[in-house]
Image 1 (spheres, rainbow, N blue to C red):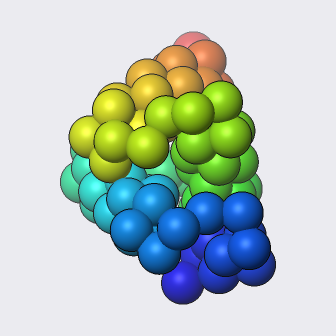
Image 2 (tube, rainbow, N blue to C red):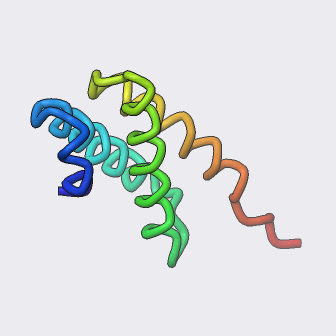
Image 3 (tube, rainbow, N blue to C red):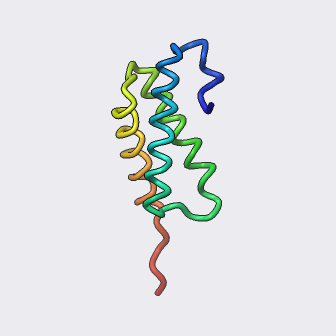
Length: 86
């Protein structure tokens, strides 16, 4: 469980929501095919940080956490698309 080390700060059902959001966003990002080689671990870390930060500000709904993380990661992926070949 990716958020296990934060178990002292969240209730079990809250950790479940964080994990569900993380898994759902990662599946969606992978399905879109925007991941470059070597980028997966950085993206996974970013996802976890975004979800954790949102949870620390009080958000506990898995769907809203998913949307927050997806928007943040999607904008980063759009900004890091490779330049077209000339």
